[in-house]
Amino acid sequence: MKIDILLGLQWGDEGKGKIVDALSPDYDVVARFQGGPNAGHTIEFNNMKYVLHLIPSGIFHEGKTNVIGNGVVLDPVVFKKEVESLNLGLDKIRERLRISYKTHLILPTHRILDAAHESSLGASKIGSTLRGIGPAYTDKTSRNGMRVGDILKENFREIYDTHVREHLRMLKSYDFAFNLSDYEAEWFDGIEYLKQFTIINSEYLIDSSLREGKHILAEGAQGTMLDIDFGTYPFVTSSNTVAAGACTGLGIAPSRTGEVFGIFKAYCTRVGSGPFPTELNDDNGQLMRDRGNEYGSTTGRPRRCGWLDLPALKYAIMINGVTRLFMMKADVLSGFREIKVCTSYSANGREITEIPYHLDEIEKVNYKTLPGWNCEISECKKFGELPPELESYISFIENETGVPVTIVSVGPDRSATIYR
Ligand code: GDP
Ligand code: IMO
Ligand code: MG
Image (spheres, helix red, strand yellow):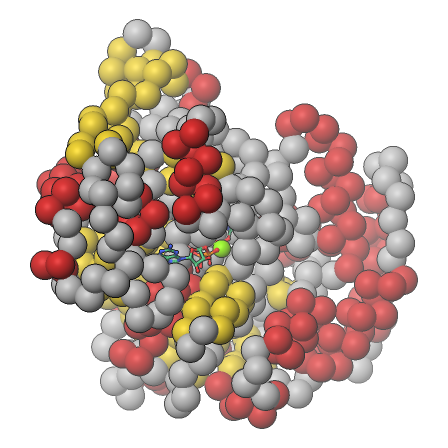
């Protein structure tokens, strides 16, 4: 058996949560491999809507094991609130969830450091979700982090105090007002809560599940263009969101990976700062935002919207070795008279189809225009029921990328999913 990987190909919020939930019946184990509560994965079914930040999106299915992997950074306050918000009951979630000893903890001071750093950047701020992600991963790579396994140590409080002292020393260099005590009290409460869950060396669970012939799905967070190495640096997150991140974030050997499912919206969105070549600051952009309800699942911020960017999509497919494409939110484009797709950029007077190192060199975005469709598609159940214009849009993307589009999503609900 091999592990399939599902990840975002754009700037996040492609609809990963919805699809992981929809595919979960086919898997025994669903495992998050990176990111933390900066993620917001929305799942809708039976007229209910849930937003997951840390818990894998297979949690609503009975008999499935969900794993928070070593590559994730976990905030116990967010974790407790999330468990309590799911209407599943503590016992069911405890039964279905496993957490790696090696998952790093987000400390209250990581959140403060994140906010202090962002505010010091002024106009050049990253647009972080302010969940403490950057500082937590910084401590991980500088070998100063605290991990979930540490909460079971007798001298946990002592280790915590040492870390906080160091963070407070760093905070002195910022002119930033903060209150640590309120969040700290909630945090310790969250740590006690966390102790009720099964904490394991999850790499062994992954290995034994594979040996037993079980199916595993690795769930990514964020998107390829937010990857710490390959995204639009420095306007990125602090982890490897790409397929390789699943190997380090769960302890999977590359030879044991199988399909790579790449999720993309039929257009593009981005929340936070940074380059976005196809961004539309016009009525079309506003229409996408309104129709697609493009407001952040974690922070509520309006998402920037624009046409599909093929050079960026092809880049993401290349880096991840995508084997199947899933097109999301096709319904949002219904009613547009024309659909535009960026096929190349112009930079330094030349037409280019690669993502340049200096994205600010892009002077112009070149589009191909395709006909739109003027009918609602949210009720379509089969590929053949989709309007021919959408079918040609999909064929165009398949021809350009060389990868088949095997799922088309036509609404937020679990059921609004067309399998090909
Ligand atoms: P994720 O972070 O990749 O899991 O995506 P988010 O949940 O942050 O954002 C995707 C948003 O689009 C959520 O509000 C979903 O409910 C919604 N959504 C997902 N798929 C579709 C779709 O096909 N059509 C529409 N209209 N909404 C969708
Ligand atoms: P999901 O998993 C969209 C963005 C932030 C900011 C940058 C850095 O729901 O797709 P961070 O808090 O990580 O330091 O922020 O990354 N960002 C996301 N954008 N979806 C996400 O996750 C994101 N997680 C982080 O807006 O621009
Ligand atoms: Mg999201």
